[in-house]
Length: 85
Image 1 (cartoon, rainbow, N blue to C red):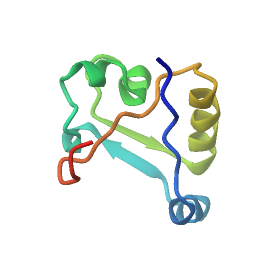
Image 2: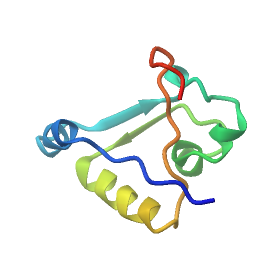
Image 3: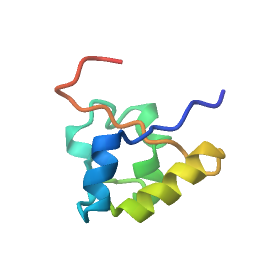
C-alpha cells in the first residue's frame, strides 16, 4: 500500500528557502529500531545505522518529488515528544 508523502508546511518551506536546512535526528524518533525505521527515507539515504539527515530546501524538493512518485521511501520520522500517530 502506498502512503502519501510527507509535505513540508508553508512556514517551514519559507524558512528552508531562506537557507535554513532541514535536519532530522533519528535519536529523536520514536520509530528508531522498528520495522518503520528500516523503511524510512533516512535509513534509505544513510544506510543501516542512520543518525541524522540534513537537507537543503532544493534537496527536500527533490525528495518530495521522488517520494510522491514512489521512487524512494517516505519520511517516517515521528518526534518522541509528539502525540502517537
